[in-house]
Image 1 (cartoon, rainbow, N blue to C red):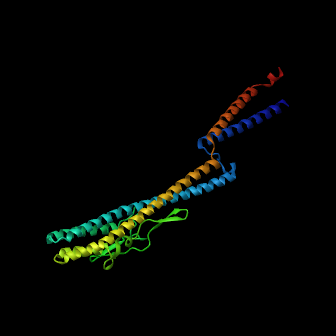
Image 2: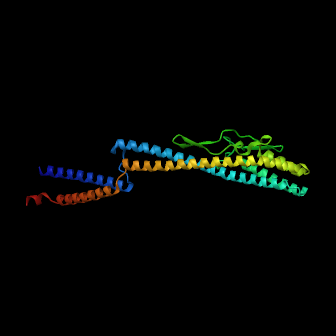
Image 3: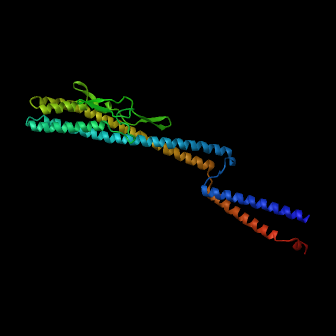
Length: 303
C-alpha cells in the first residue's frame, strides 16, 4: 500500500509541476510578445478576429504602396508643371521684347534661338516619365506623350490618365494628360504651345515688318497657354492634397486596427507579469515541497 501511495504521490506531483511549468512558460511568452494567444485553440473567436485584422492590415499596406506611388508621380508632375509655367512666362517676356521696333535682325534671331530652346525644353517636360518609366502626361501609355515629325509636335498619348486606388473605394489620377497642359484655344482657334513658339521663332528668324504682328499674336496665345498650365498645376495640387487626406484616414484606421488587436489578442503587461511572478512563486514552492517530501523514506515514516 505504501508503494502504491508513493507512486501516486510522484505522479500527482509531476503532473502538478509540469502544469505549473507550462503555464509559467505561456505567461513568459505573453510577456515577451505582448500577445495573449499563442494558438488559435486558445480562443477560436478571438483568433478569427485577429485573422480578419491581419487581412485588413495587408490591404492597408497595399493601399499605402499605391498612395506612395501616386504621391511620387504627382510630385514629379507638379515639379514639371512649375517648369512649364516658368518657360511660358519667359516666352511671354521674350515676346514683349521682340515687339520693340529698336531690335536689330541679330537681336531678333537671338530671341528666336532662345524660343527654340524653350520649345525643346517644353517638349522634354511634356515627355517626363515617372519612377516606373510611365509617361506623366501621356495618359495610360508607357511610351512618350509627344513626338516631333518634320518640325511638327503631335500628341500620341490617350485621353485617360493613369488611375491608382487608394482604398475604401477611393482612387486618384496620378497626373494630367498632355492636352490638359499644352493645348488651348488661342485667338485663331485650337492650338498648342509648341505650334505657337515654333511659328513665333520662325517669324523672328525671317525678320522684317511682320515681327511686331508675330509678337502680338504670340502674346495673345501665351496668356491662355499660361492659364491652361497653371490650371493643370492647381488640379495636380488638389489631387496631392486628396492623397494626403487618404493617408491621414489610413493612419487613423491603422491606429484603430492596432487598438482592436490589442483589445482582442493583447496581453496586459502589468497584469501578465504579476501573474507570471505569482506562478513562479507557486512553482518554486511546489518544487521545494516535492524535494522535501520525496526525501522522506519508508524508514523515516516507520520511526
